[in-house]
Image (cartoon, rainbow, N blue to C red; front, side, top):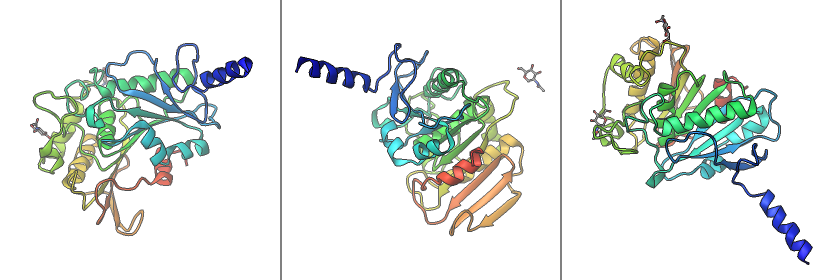
Length: 302
Ligand SMILES: *[C@@H]1O[C@H](CO)[C@@H](O)[C@H](O)[C@H]1NC(C)=O
Ligand SMILES: *[C@@H]1O[C@H](CO)[C@@H](O)[C@H](O)[C@H]1NC(C)=O
């Protein structure tokens, strides 16, 4: 009897999900929290999914949840875990430490490269994963929904050297949620309501100012937004497209290609250049459904 108790407590110990220094690598096939990944300037939590069929040199997808969401919810509610088993990449699910679980996309710290905000903490999760798994540093991607889409744009702007591509579902331009009083995870009604309107040059400068002096390659970007979005008004789609078109020096007023009913009926795909495209979903509200198979193509896994 005592042996059985000892055995079952051993079992529960080994299946404990929190990691410590003695267990260097998370168990594949589980959503696991990594508690010790070096410097974490904010309390954003680090959850990871390592597929059972890990690629030899795996890529990494950072999947960022929406407000009120958690890493666990985005893990169960998005297709990336299943896709990681198919393609062998690792998924990082950061979890917001703020009340209401919106991401900090407003403070000076998070809107700066190595500025000590949530973006910095997430970048450090990526660095830990690259080192621990000898992952492919050229195949690091970021995606997210709503607040997670805002963070996707912020990470693309603050860590252009880290990410090869980003896909944002229903977000705002990087820096649009800025808090002039430097609030952390502050709501910005002007931006949410679609009243933060600027030129492509101005929006591009917002990106450049997040990592001054950076002149290397930047992630290619794909932006989804619904035309009936009442939470993050659809003007944010136009502004985000201006931003990335501006960053890459594309002419926002003369896209390369506009295609109706692509990738599905009622959606319109606009290609501004090889590194920036938008998909506008007519009649769709906040939180456009994730198109996992298309994401895999955009990231180059499929
Ligand atoms: C909200 O963001 C806009 C830029 O997008 C900025 O001009 C405005 O000052 C911000 N509002 C607050 C209250 O900080
Ligand atoms: C790009 O930045 C690097 C490092 O900051 C610098 O050495 C290099 O001269 C810059 N290149 C150009 C074309 O500005």
